[in-house]
Image (cartoon, rainbow, N blue to C red; front, side):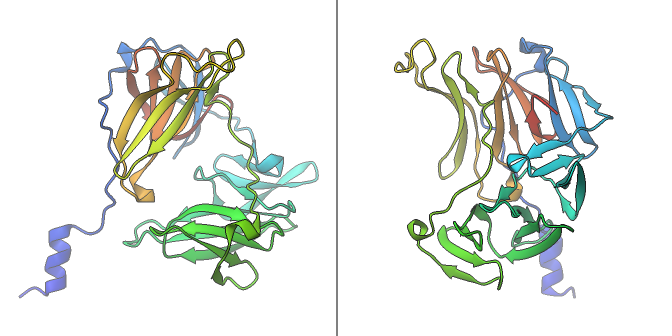
Length: 297
């Protein structure tokens, strides 16, 4: 007779994260009047270039360095780098997976979040990297997803909001201990250069991702343009894309939203799938597999 635990494993097939899915049906790429503009994406093969009207990925051979965290951190071919005079030093054992590094207020360290793949509890960890030579890495495991990670004002700790309750706790970087904290007392500041390609200033439009209990939506909202900064227009909010919203980091979330340079089309991601859409009609189509879409490499 098979043990009960073995029957359970065979019946369930092991743990496999349930991915979020599109509710709004996609169209064929040929149905869109997508421009021949090229965007750049991160894939398992490294950095690639994709033309929006073709959906064919081309490897970028001479991979440039993308500057992050106010220029203190760089990424090249998925690998974090820190400045060393006129050159760069590779951060050992830490690769870029799309989570923006958060630089400390004193500019001496940065942190990123990571998921530990293949675990039933979706264990996370916060990775601390010291910029002093040589670059040092310290890992802080967590039992819940860290949805918000900020630096304390004095750079000695992190303010972490995690789990269903979203309780704010302070992580002491010297001891690794967590303790409840008062958000107002810590006065946290996030040091990450904001993206602006989700805003079309000429038309007074902005792409945003909104969440409910079981839905996530990509919407375009009117924010007022240079000609009419105080006027929001006839349709201040329009839903472009809707998807399920399962609260698991492995499920994939809507993100990476940006306008094309003419603002007539938009790009977004759901998990590791990249889509291009037409703003006038709201139609969108699958482009390629990848993450972190940008206009520049």
